[in-house]
Image (cartoon, rainbow, N blue to C red; front, side, top):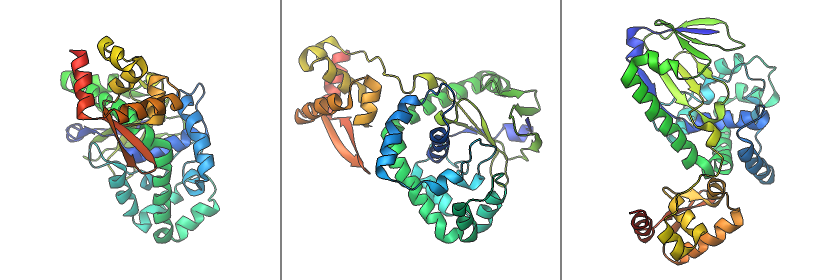
Length: 326
């Protein structure tokens, strides 16, 4: 059990943020040991073969995320300083970590030091840039194709909880956060299996970070000098990887065909072929074929992001979807 004392000053500094870098860390943990009845099975089945095919060396990153997980070095995913950081910003923070901070974090690991971790401990300045490059490569393969969907779920959760905070204060907020979390008016309790500690937020406040890959547990960070942080599963996690029923305007379906109309309606923001297949329930091959027709017709455009091509509605496509829904 973790007990975190929060003063009036701390409660005045409660804030929300999602974290691409933390999702990298948490998703590696899921790949290493999927939770029972994992709601991420569709993602695992899509991503694991892709990582094997790319032959990406994840040795150090994997070693830093032990399973079973009693702790993860804080320097690996520091709490974000803004509410909506991108991975580049967070990796800049990782690259800026001092050798002392890295060694302190590694010394706290309860597992025996592996050869890769020993190398990082001995020479952080040389190894840390390679770790950041590995994270970038992993991101492009495993998370970038699905980031719009993950980010959208986290953003909706933040809006929901900000409304709870506005309507009923922190008591209402914490009552709805997670079954592992409780609040008695002075102390925030987190029912960790392997933690028995009392901490003080020390006027730093509290950061609440929704994380799709943290489910079904809660992770906490109370290591100075960072702001105390709780990472919890957002609402709607069970629907994250399921095809989304899409209301397709009949007039649009009559002109384009139902599958193409569904794809065009789904493209509220740029998406990859893989993510669209997961969202619509169509095969990746069918999605690719339909997108080609929509692109040739001037209804969608495409741009490259790393190794992936992202599709988005053009102005003409937007007017068709908007007009079809009127």
